[in-house]
Image (tube, rainbow, N blue to C red; front, side):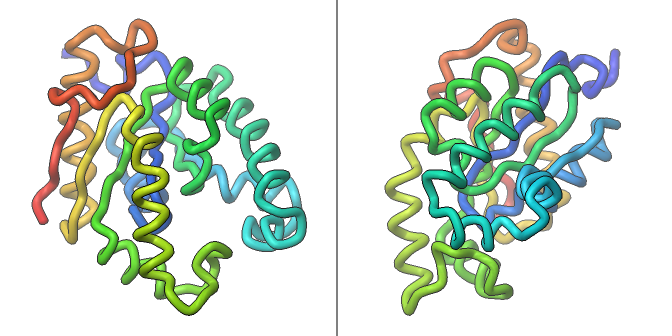
Length: 200
């Protein structure tokens, strides 16, 4: 059987809230697939010469999202690779439409409690610099959930090792390609066949 990475004809893009593990899981996934990996926040920082958090603070969310959308459009133009996006990228309707048309999108869905613990390790998240980061994550989860649910694949991840999450993603990608959905844009409505849970 042809290797999974060789069967992909478009990028694989990880979306979800901050702390879901998109960058760490993305690097492991790319290695398993034999594909390049890129983190959109790292690319933004490289182009701007400052951190994504500093750009967010300096220019505001609207300008940051506009620049993020332009960068994401460049990242999905041609090269088959694994891309980790910032937590708010997929919430932007134009970015979401672009990604669902030109990539295979995967929502890493983790419980708010785990997200709170992970994001609390470093003070690098502008939206969480307040007295109630857990409450903020809960609100963001509710607000952004409907947008994330439009991803082609949903992988529920708990406290499992990242390697287990990668295995769940690989299984979901196999299912997705077997269904012929990679030949064109899917409806992106979270088909049950592409909704997997990794062990908690």
